[in-house]
Length: 115
Image 1 (spheres, one colour):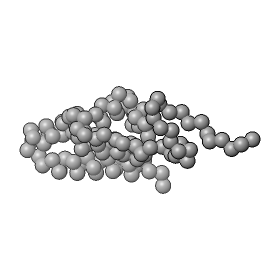
Image 2 (image 1 turned 120 degrees about the horizontal axis):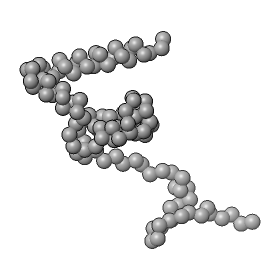
Image 3 (image 1 turned 90 degrees about the vertical axis):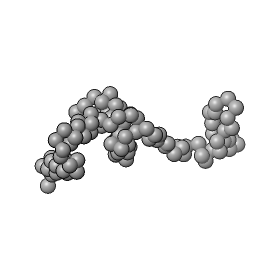
Image 4 (image 1 turned 30 degrees about the horizontal axis):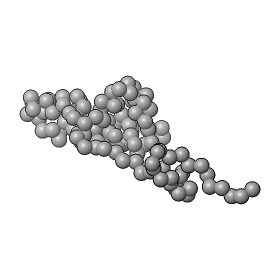
């Protein structure tokens, strides 16, 4: 039997990729235009963890639709909007509020770490 190149499906008019390139996936392009800083950071963290939106949703106890909304371009998530409103209404420095959230979140992480 003669050696044959593997069959490579293509779209009409597209040149077939070289056989050695057939199983190499293309680089992933993520469009972050229009995303808030929080949305971009959430999407990046999820991507780097190798998670799909429904997986992250299950892990944090929200719907997949909620995770999808967090990552969409436009306004930042409501938590961020409310935090900014609290800072504006009280005159509190935003860094103070964000640092308090960071410390509380770290305490949650530390309490859940099995040692």
